[in-house]
Length: 359
Image (cartoon, rainbow, N blue to C red):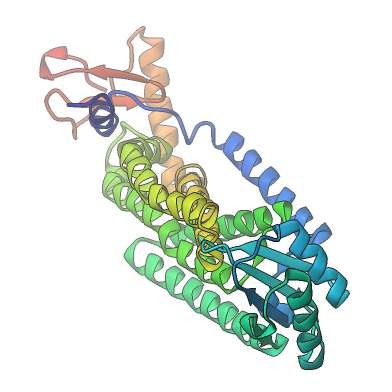
């Protein structure tokens, strides 16, 4: 068995583990800091909306010896507006200029043909109206709202409402971070970006649902035992699925990274670049939130319940009594099995029926 596989097995059995729940305030603080940064960036810098949303013209030129920076200068001089220039894989240029109407577009096309020294009829021009972008944005918001409602309803039925609320907060967290990064680095927001943002919602939920499913099984009839608090079982659920979450995230990120850095960076595939960037950031944020945000939030919400609070008091009283007697806590109770691993906080102990210690 590989070292990673052995670690995953030990995490699943509870022999080792990291106290994610116990350190949740650190993760909450980090997430709040990142979220505030993203919101401030959106408020100050805004988003670099693509031509699909602000309207304008897109010119695609044949292969030219003119550099990207020089072509951008020509386009801005001809139009009087800011221009975005991309070099495509075949050496041709894609020039976007916002705020142009039909007459202005024709004039800019003529000027570009002269400056780039290419035939005018070889430059493809496409005029985009801002109303089309507004329709796309409206449909995207509608789809996002419907998706969120369906997610909350499904999780509330399949698990419980606390998990539904935690998953919803994690989704909003992931979207805010992704959009904030677009604002901070100034990447252009296109239709491809919107598609990518809607796509990451499903990926973001995947790891969260896996942990929730494990937690649901772990906490079945939890009040009938006095071994683990809800937070401790939540911590076991995260550790038990940790390697699986890491593996699935890495496997998903690798092809997306290929699309982003090779397809977009090397080949200059514009739409592919937009989709892959939002996917890459969203996948990473989704993996983080499922481990550090969603499950700790569920633990916080559950431990507000009277029954769970009473259980925690009984467990703490039991452990305090054992400590007063000079006994080390081994986590035994009537639900114990032979040679089961009992984990409380950072330590683990193995015991069987021969131990002779009872709570």
